[in-house]
Length: 121
Image (cartoon, rainbow, N blue to C red; front, top):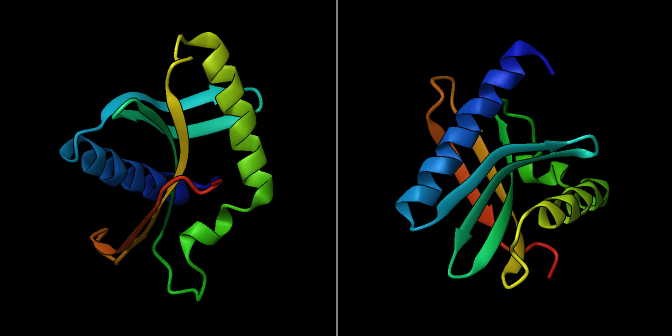
């Protein structure tokens, strides 16, 4: 990952975090890493743990950020979720895999924001 790509990702994760906090979510983890992969944000709301993949871009390519969350990526996310759940005491919670798809303009302002909740159900 290049430095520019990393900075764009950090901006996107900050936008997603702010959205979650403003909408009553409790942030549990940011950038939860294992040797199998990473989950950008983990949040709790209404007894549901949300595992959130944040995809951010600035280019005008005809592809949306959410399109990068394919079956292979979802399988990786599920593997990391299983590790997370083994390490935490959240057996009584429901789970949701969510995607924040963010397009920024040249000034890093939000041009487009789409949120997809519970993408595996």
